Amino acid sequence: MEPMNRRKLLISAASIGGVGALAWYASRTATMKSMPGMDMAGGDMPGMNMGNASEKGGRVRELPTGSALPEIPRLKNDSGIAGNFIAQLEAATASHSFVPGLVTPVLAYNGSVPGAMIEVYEGDQLSIAFKNSIPGQASTIHWHGLDIPADQDGNPTHPVESGTGRTYAFTIPAGSAGSYWYHPHPHGLTAEQVYRGLAAPFIVRSKNDPLDAKLGDTVLFVSSISLNSDGTIAENTAADRFNGREGDHVLVNGAKQPVLSVQPGASRRYRIYNATNGRYLRIALDGHKMTLVGTDGGLLAAPIRNLEEILLAPAERAEVVIDFQNKTGRFALNSMPYERGWMGRDKPAATILPLMTFEVAGASVSSIAVPEKLRDIAPLGEPASVKRIVLNETMGMANGAMTMEFLIDQKSFDMNRVDLRSKVGEVELWEISNTTDMDHPLHIHGTQFQVVEREINGSKKPQSFLAWKDTVNIVSKEIVRLKVRHSLPGLRMYHCHILEHEDNGMMGQLDVV
Image (cartoon, rainbow, N blue to C red; front, side, top):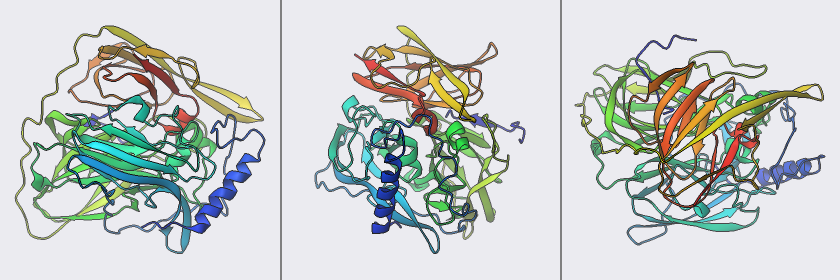
């Protein structure tokens, strides 16, 4: 692995519906339901070792590259009233062509992979009529990172059964402008529904954005895909279940290694999402430095300039401004090697992974300054209580194969058990200890928190900047301390956002009263 001795920042920080896709998915679900111990509707699949059973003639090793960066479609607002956003979302089977000549059955929101981007303003009233048309599987929509009522959060305690629907309705909180996203969160089926295509960005805008509109605002939504040679999406292997699915191919806005044209000297704003199940993105741009202006919960108080790399764990987001120097050429945005720990066999090679290319050409333009102050972020005060949780893993053998369990406080997730309790409005200090042999990104529902300190081997290091976060990476044998305050009552989840680990038990329930 390349030494991490450069200036760095750890953020821890054209689909169509198809009858063929519907028939394939219904057939697959029916087959799995008939297997001993399998219940796809309930989603609890302990001990299942799918392995590589779905690989028919091997994997697709090459996807077309070099197309123009696709623009993610916007979800249509059906309301004609200012401050209201009304729309419909359907999760259903569809067909998509990642490779010419191959049709891939996917799951999609309104037929699109990635799903349509939702754009709203602080204070808007949102109403989304959701229909679950996934054959044989419950689903939800989780509005990742938003501070909204618990019964609208889309957590696994409120499943939407196949063939039914519900309306999600909530107010976008004041001061919440930032880069969020939405994805399913059904018990035991989250990882599969996301890697089959159900994920999309959700942007909350401020009417008083301090960044110049001339910077633009481009979403880079990073996901991944693994395809069998017949075009079907490969199911998780043992390595995927143990470590989190990294995917054979990494996509940006649904395309592999796309190209985006910019002019020399231009300053541009980008929102980078890590929407993969389990791949870490250590992002660097050839020949350029980045200015970090925002994290999960929106803008920083002040920009952090001259960064050569930014690490995004699964579910983390970053807003950056890039100044393209007065030189022309093609510059790759790469994911550099990162050692996050690995269990079992088939560890990926430590290579530089190109995500996309910026083609800098044309007439030079003037750069645009990023202001020294972006907004006020008040530190959360003295905590009224302390919570300590421990991330655990256990290894065993069953039927001659290695098995893994991912736990919190030595317990596997149980929807009938409340693990922690909090009080509305009370500042808490959370101390999260990772005793496992790999990194885990911890996500807390329904709030944004402030990371205050990290500790490894007794050496404590204060967080170097103040930011709002909903997901924090915790490296092996590290303790992370954060301050959090819940503004609304109800049942909330906290879990590892390596989705295979979440599905395999690394999740707890917090009751806020």
